[in-house]
Length: 131
Image 1 (tube, helix red, strand yellow):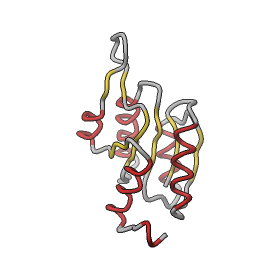
Image 2 (cartoon, one colour; image 1 turned 30 degrees about the vertical axis):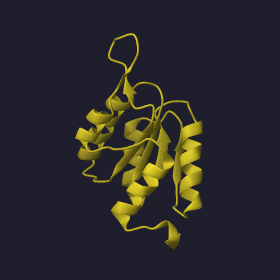
Image 3 (cartoon, helix red, strand yellow; image 1 turned 45 degrees about the vertical axis):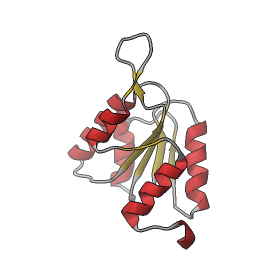
Image 4 (cartoon, one colour; image 1 turned 120 degrees about the vertical axis):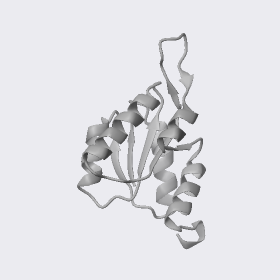
């Protein structure tokens, strides 16, 4: 799994990394504030089975769209898990929740690391007992 954040907030990424490690899932941690182009470049040059993005900065929908554009351009098809603060700044006082918009794009939204692990289990026939 490739793991990255959309911003400098590292705590969510670290929690996800530890959860994946606990179940013996290999993680390519790209770090913080990674551009969608860099994430897809790394995904296309490694043997990756999924992408996990942590976000906090109110750019979830914009980031997801760019990530999907880059995947299409690279002819890459991978599940994308996104968790954290799933909001988008649309010029109002506060960013708005875009969870449903992300789901419509095919993004697997996660409110917790368990959501992501359960999603990985469904996609890859992985069980916590096997790890």
